[in-house]
Image (cartoon, rainbow, N blue to C red; front, side):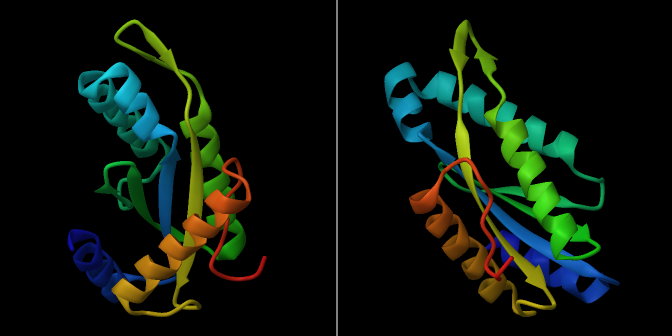
Length: 149
């Protein structure tokens, strides 16, 4: 898994905390089915561009699955990680104009922090995924964390 490799490299170079975030695009599969793969692909490109605009050059972004993006960002601590997750969630939720279609998405965010939540890349990614899944079940419009807030 490329995300785990990237995370392992960042963990070796870090001075502070690293936030591992997963953003699951709620309803994407329905949009993709209803509007077609071309619109779905263009929508994913738009989401990736918005994510990139939220991050510093040293942060990493990747696509984990058909409707899931990962972000690995250097943060000062849990509060800054939560603020970034909230900002990204809001940016994803802004309306899209894709090839003549107006589309809206929501997302479920899961956050894990290194070193407080662990140092193993696969463990951190799994914790962020579990937090994202729990958040999707709770409320698709707010960010969740693998640790208590």
